[in-house]
Image (cartoon, rainbow, N blue to C red; front, side):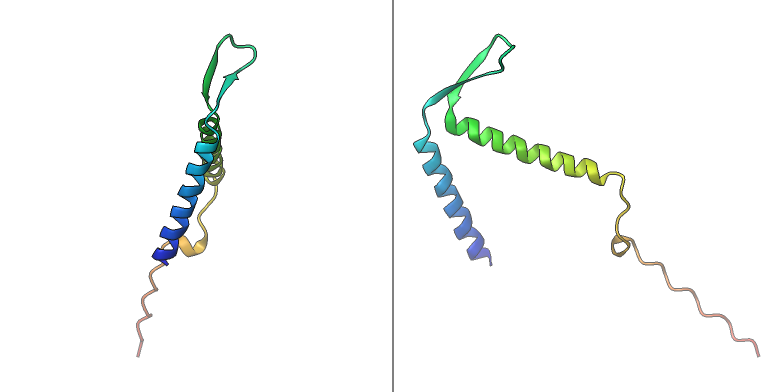
Length: 88
């Protein structure tokens, strides 16, 4: 299982490196009403957008779970009640 994870991670890294090398040209990024613009490589813009989306999605999921109770299986088990004493 670990071997498969290493192989898939290396393959993903190779794909990302090929993408970065193929998209090195600079692009200008500006937020239209604001007076400034920044130039950066296209691959950096794509990676930053992807990572920002992942972080925002994780944050939204965390916010959605704040008000929920954990499922019953995650709660600690109640200790068993002691047996009733026998009356003779």
